[in-house]
Length: 366
Image (cartoon, rainbow, N blue to C red; front, side, top):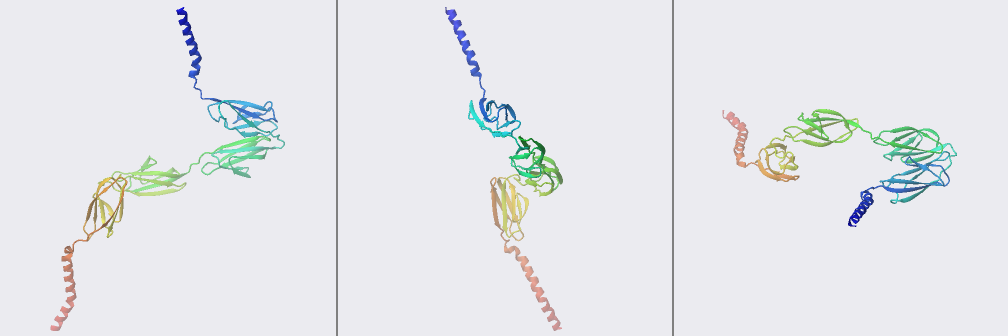
């Protein structure tokens, strides 16, 4: 009896596992939607979802079952039947799993020899021209278009012109979609540097050394870098214009002996009087007023020299990214240093003034 019970228990466990395994393993994100398409006045019309055939209207309607992972699997429904104009409508987003969405359409008999054109483009907002007569913007629907062939031209700034010859059928809608291709424009960049021989990088691609003229550069803004041993790297933005040569010349600053040429601090120097020779960390930087960029964080030695004035020497501590302004008053040299020169000048002047009088008195005495 115990043996039978144990086998029965094993059998029950196996049955439970078999029943639950599919449920436990199920992890299907797909959902089921129903679209109820109604066209009471026409039976036999073909139903298309985004151009995909779904069936025919029967007894005034058709229910389309859709299984999809997308919350909105289709966007447009079309009904088509000979002798009738196509009927179009947008498909709304389903409310949820196993929910029904109802769409009501009315088909019109095609009594005339005209059709409809549905125009769209990617990107939208393009300008269209039909047979060099009718124009507008995409997307658009044109009705009462004579059956036959027509030329459609679609343009948009920055994109290549799209042209096609389409055929319009009486009573039907011809869908025209234009995938516009982006148009690329090119220009030329002429680069030079002082000194020459700097390596050229455009958008991080190496091209050669200065001076150099480079064609086939896409119109727009590019990052240009110049590198040369012993000089501070130059990095800037250059705008290239379509079918135009853009000349650019850069003066590269020496980096030997100057601490922090790759830094971000700036020192603005002015002096009274102006025109004093300036050096930072014993490297000449020009005459005041002068702006020195690319200094690293830390202490720098600033020296100003000017004729007739005492040298200015001081230490300046800069932080990373800091901009410091110094307005320096140069002190005149002491008067004693000028006394001998001034006395000599005075004696020479007096002697020159007295010389005519002395000569005159000598002539009278004779």
